[in-house]
Amino acid sequence: MAHPTMYADADPYLTRLRTICLALPGADEKVSHGRPNFFTRKVFAIYGGVVKGDHDPEPFRQALLVLPDDTDRAALLEDGRFVVPGYYGPYGWLMLDLRHPHGVEGVDWDEVGELVDASYRRTAPARLVARLDAS
Image (cartoon, rainbow, N blue to C red; front, side, top):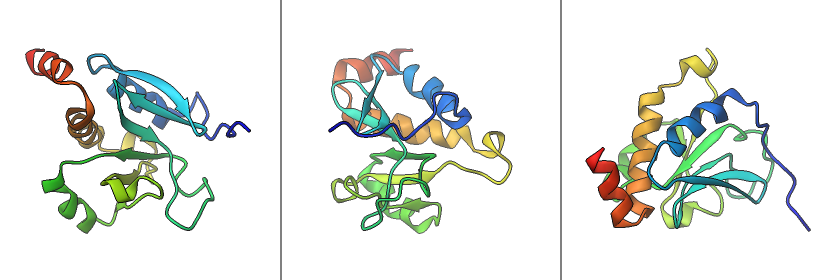
């Protein structure tokens, strides 16, 4: 049984996230479990998630899941905007709700870019990370 689609292609948050993710060397997008996943060999960012014990996709439909550096994880968890997502949390992933009272323009997209970059560096092959560093 296929998972239902849990995003809209025209979602402005997803549009901005795609721009960030797909600009990275060798990055591509696939839909897995009804959500956009950005990957090289391994997934480095996911759009949308849930928290453990709550399978309602709506509260975090417009969220970013990333795998931060181990050294940054504790500090990010002290920031109330970050939560441990269901399924991925035990593996070190964190989730940031992108929805902002001022809409897509209120999001700190530089911060999102830094989070995506860190996650990419943890999951991408060394040759792609070297290409990123060379650019």
